[in-house]
Image (cartoon, rainbow, N blue to C red):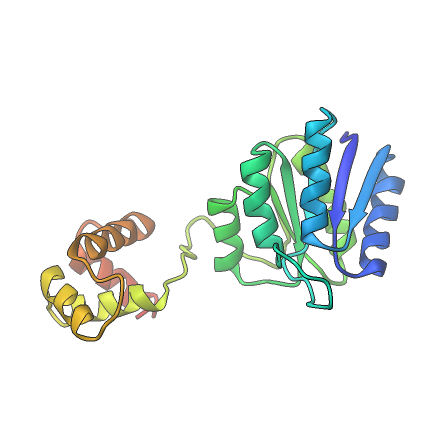
Length: 221
């Protein structure tokens, strides 16, 4: 089992509950806690410099603003910084967020190892998550559906704008010109081409008509 774990939560009761649960279930010798992302990052950096790195980070996504000045203001920013500092660190997110698209993005882009939803069964699921991550497997709370057959890629406003213009029959060059007229950036033809290609990959579309048909069936545009 893990020997050194860092818990980052901005509420003391939540922190203590996690610490006590992990100590009881796994007898982890070193469990340290921080209430701020900056301090958590500094603790991780110091441990790495001393050649005594943490093996697991458990962090919330949202941290309430107070009088303390901060550079890292969210769990997401902490995870991004950690991935540059210690790419192989195991990361479990423990948060109230239950949007499948956002959770999927954390796995895909930030390479998190597990996602636990806070709630009635939060601590018991956290125990399962720690077990799974220790054995190099992923874990997602049962209330979040990440069925691989369902694409949960989240379209942003720029994607939707491009797709609607494509649906109206505009070419990528014409869309680029329209964006420039509206002072919307980015607006280059190459940027539009890259975004459309990414959507092809995300939704398994063969061409623009196929992509639009898939999105219309899913009520995404």
